[in-house]
Structures are given as structure tokens and as C-alpha cells.
Length: 420
Image 1: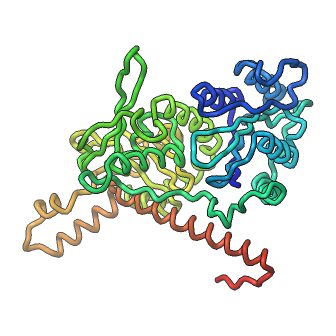
Image 2: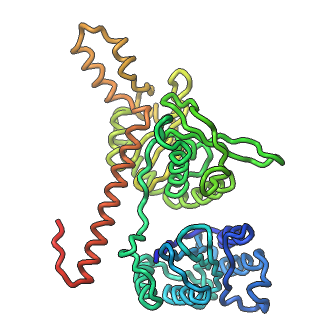
Image 3: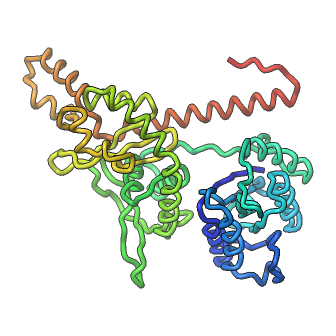
């Protein structure tokens, strides 16, 4: 069994996410627990009633900024567990996590090959105090293992259920299955990255040679089409409707991710601003600033006009997979103020072809000197470096995960691990 916990600012939003699945026939509400004062059965409750009960509890404390406790429990592919056992699993899990007396709703989803349930609750108890989330992941993992034993479920490590990020790869038109490759990129960005605007969403997609375009659907609704792009950023091949791709990455889906990104980024921005500010104070050029950020796992994404003029800057934190505009970090990190702080205008790094045209073929020393100068004073305008940073980070995470799994298995078998 796999457990995945998320937090949010609105328990009602998590409820309506699950209720929308119910409305589409992709899920069913199994039960509600601890809804004191409500005498209706679970089947008689409307989505608004379920959401309202949890929102009322969350309103008991204004200090808890992320009161939503939303967890999914996924079983192995092919496992068949009756609804009454799924409810028993949910109750045992919530009791062990310290939510046994909290109001919560349990949903069974049918939209994937892995049978799974979602549980929505709140992190605020009846007195207005926050339920402790210290060592929450460790506690959840211990409970998972116990539930696997109690209900005879497949063990996550043995069933290879432990989730790992699939390696994102740039799309190359004419190579492979275009629809599948575009879908893999879109799903990877929506699942693993945090962004707060549609422009930022597109910036992330374009790292992997994909773009999203907003279109107007029947009835005036907002819709999206996705296509591959070439190295100049021009669309190539057919544009595909969001509704035609697996998991339907529609405008509504992207909008939910943008709203979630705003809340999560708000909690992270202060610490990131300090880190970037320290590197900016130490930098003497654009290239120097870029390299210092690169050591932190961060990359600069320049926004350039038709003639290479810099009109904006974004920062991508590859470790947290989060993108910020300069203004989101603060006024000191906008393009104009960075030009002032670094004491020089921004110039795009020339391509090899451009450099060869500017430098006389009989002056190799000058060519080398100019190339070194460009590396010092400019930042890359291509996405290859960013993709390589993300790929290296993914490989490192998978390696660490594999080592941790091996340590656990050795510990269980009472062998002494010999790991370097």
C-alpha cells in the first residue's frame, strides 16, 4: 500500500475534488465520520454539507494556515478489497495518525488501475488547536506496514509500489509517439512542479519542447490545446485538445494546480529570497550570478524580446521543482533591478554560428577570449542545462530511494548492511 499526504488551505476544495469524481462516476463516497450534530446518513449529505462541516472545524483557528489533511491510500494493482474493509483500513489509519476523533470523509476511487481511497479531514481539533504533524511521514509509514499485515495486503517494497518520478524527456517531433510523449511531459509538470500562473506553466512545459495554448470552447468555456515546439519555440505537428490526452489536463486541472502553487510558494518564498539575495550580493556579473545559483540547484530563465532585450526574469528551484518570477521573490530581483545590481546590461549568449560570424577565422586566440567573456557575463538562453539539472536530480533521488529500500530490507532480515 502507498500513502500520500497533502495539505491545503481549504478542506472544502479537497471535498469538492472528490465529489466531482463521484459525479463523473469515477468514485463513491463510502462514509463520513464524526459529523456530530448531523443526523443524516452519508448518502443523504450533499457535497456542500460535507465541505461545510470541515470548513466549520477549520474556522476554529486562524493560525493554522493549511488546515486540510488529505491522504490517499493506494493498494497494489489487481488487489480486491471490499468496501467495508476499505473503511476499516481508513479508520485504522486515521486513528493511528491522531485523527480518530476528527470529522473526515472517505472516498473510493475507480479511475486508476490501482484501487485507492481518499480521506479528507482537518488539522484543527474541537478546541481550535492544531493536530501535531511532527514525524508525520514516519508515523504514516509505520501505520502502512501494520495495515499491510493486518489486512493481508501486498507489501509495498515487494510489490514495487513505491512511487518514483518518471524521468521527463524533451519531446522531439518525428521521433516516437507524439501524443504519448506530450502527455508524459504534461503529466510530469502537473504532478511534480509548483507554479502559480499560466505563463509559468508554459515556461516549464517549454523546457521539454511542449507548449499549451488557451482556446475558447463551446459555451465560452476556457480550454487548452497542447503541441510540440521546435528549438525556435514554433509549434510543430498537430495541436491536441486537453480532453483527448490521458487524465485530461484541462484548464480546470491547470487552474487547481495554479491555486495550490500560490499557497505552497507563499510558504517557501522567504527562505528562497534570502538564499538568492546572498548570491546576488556576492556576484559581479550575470554569469557569476548564474553559476552561484546553479550550485544551489537553481536556474535563471530569461524573458527576452524579439531583439534579445531582457524584459523579465524567472527563477527555477529544481530541487523543490518550483518556479518564481523575479517580482514574486521581491522588487530587487526583477530584470531592471538585477541589471542595476550587477552593473551591466544583459546580453544573450550567442550561438556557435553567431560567434563564428563575428570572429575572424584567422584569430583563434580572440575567439577563445570572446567565448570566455561570454561565459562570464551572460546566462544561457537555452533549456538544455535546466533539463540536465532536473535529470541529474531525478537520478540522485532514485538512487537515494533505492539505497533506503535496500537498508530497510536488510534490517528486516537482520543482516548488517555494508553500504558506502
